[in-house]
Image (cartoon, rainbow, N blue to C red):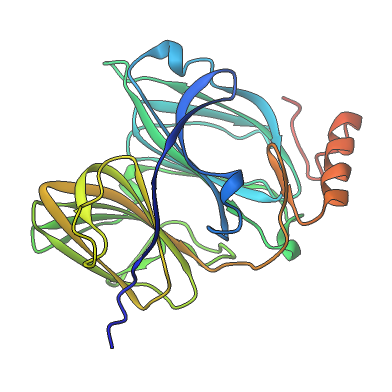
Length: 289
């Protein structure tokens, strides 16, 4: 019996504005809950026009989620109420656990050619850990394992396990796996996918066939959501392919979501926003932004 996962949904990302006027592509978000459980949102920010991104994402709160930012080109500067400050550049990752509450800002800047390109993924926290202590982790490109398969495929392992290698981010409740996969033309990539886990891919460059039952390969800025199964099998087209491959264990919990805060009930949302207005939002030792 074939245990290879088949495509459940396939669609293109859509342009939107966020922050102080940042132009980006919304891959999936609010309207797709709970299809991507435990993931909430994926944004693709890609531009060589500074006026489309330099206004950035000024100070704003988060509670109940984790945000994962992965940069391919340019830089993103971070500052938060815990006193963390840093800049992530090409190949770097910022993994922020908002937990009980954090206020932060993210300010993008292009490279020497004014190019900015990266992705931000939101992962939900289970009810038991919504109010956990906030945590910030900055991971450099040098800390991310790079695995080459027979000179045909290169895998950057941001989180999870791959062929005996372990990603630099651990202790995450949803057992996530986050791979950046680059394939030469015609290469075939197979990878185990635990039964019951949500698995999706997002095409970054080139084209690839994510399901042997479909004739037409998927192109850039396409989101592929898989059905259940034991593994994924992907074949690059003649252009080669690059894609993000992400999986995680669903929480199966109610989602109450308003702006930058995701809880389990409307009452918890009301409390969070009331505390933000009253100045009691931050539960951990902090530095006022």
